[in-house]
Each structure stands twice: as structure tokens, then as C-alpha cells.
Image (tube, rainbow, N blue to C red; front, side, top):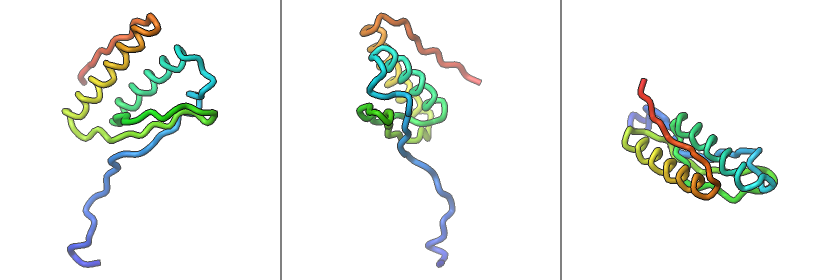
Length: 102
């Protein structure tokens, strides 16, 4: 391998996850609540969901990008908050987002 071809680092910049329990058989409210929990877990693990594919008998697949900066984290949290507001209105829930710093 030449000097030019040496790899200095490798980073995961995205991927796809599958949530097996989020199937098409789950009722809409339970699905929305579970999706909210999975979404927050992904953000806490520095993953930003980009596309939630349609649920089927094997679960729900989610395409994601890695959150690499504080700005990207702010965007991910803003998108998540929009979803929380949507399910709060649709299902009469009272989910709120509270960010804490270490």
C-alpha cells in the first residue's frame, strides 16, 4: 500500500437498524410511544433517524446518520420534538423533551 493509500481512520457515518417489536400488528398509540422511546435511544447513542420504513411482520427498519457535531445533535432533537408534539396531539399524550448536560 502506498503512502497515499494508507487509511488513517474509519468512521461509521450511517446505517440501518431494525426494531423487531415494532411490527404492523402493534396498535397505533403503542407504536407511536415505542417509536418515541427508540428514537430517543438512538439520539442518545448519537444516531439521527432519517427514514422510518413501513412496519411489517419483521418489525420496523430505520435508516440513520451518525450525529457528528453539536449542531447535528440540535437538529436531531428538534426533529424529535416535532414528532413528540405530533403524537401528543394525535393520541392525547403529554410527552416533553428535557435536555440535560453532564
